[in-house]
Image (cartoon, rainbow, N blue to C red; front, top):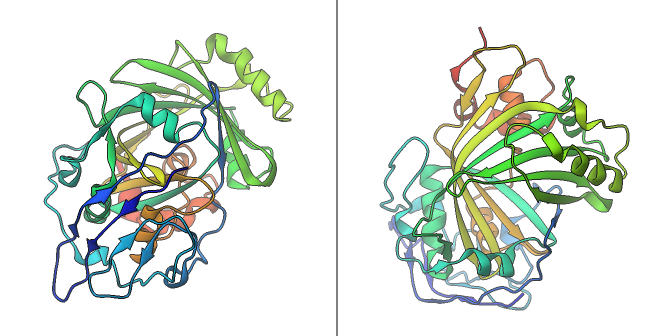
Length: 361
């Protein structure tokens, strides 16, 4: 992966409420792509990371008041948590609707096409880290990253609508396996890109050392496995997941949201807003539904080393959150089920995760 320079990101100057981003040289990361599979390395336990002494070659924050951030190629000096004070900065991005935001800091950022994004940052071994931020915190992060960022743009659009349907057994086996962190857990879903109408069937399994492996194939039924049952069976068998009958998998939860994707010199970053969950309970004419209100899900996708975005977040005292669009949605809408893995996230953002629009009568 090539390196780039992210220069003069200034913040934390006495009584200053703005993040001033200077010029940047953004190199394009190179990575090989595969046609049908994605291998994701789990982030592990990152809560013990101390942002004041982070090493790993992406951000070198000086202790000077201007707080220059330099994305270099080698190991870095200790990161000064006061160098970039995201909590003391503001931007002028405006809330435009319940499902999406306009990020003013990214309006002048150069575009990147899908083919180049895929060649640079998609379908590779990676570590995924998710953060639940307020809208204001997300704006400040994007303002700091904007000088070195390129934004995915397709046919003039920079924000894209996604919809997913998750499949589970009648007793919610995939949810329970995740809740209790079983090694042979799996996930089956369809993902539809609503702006283009393209739909994929995806199967996620766990490999050695906590690595998550994702396989996908083009699919023609967003709300049913249909002929994709054979694909699911093959992928699960190949991963050593036995005893799963695809015919028992039925739609369990639907989600929809809006996404903006950034290509950074050292990572890909997604920004999800307007997340809505719908519990698909057989026999119910009025499903339970909840909206993730007032928060933004930011996800970094990197190689083994943390990205410049991760470091900025750590400096602002954010740590990766345990959140799964499927499992967290089920935990919110089904209070009778265990929510062990996601309890901390639900506790930290109770108002955001418990905003029910409709409930099962």
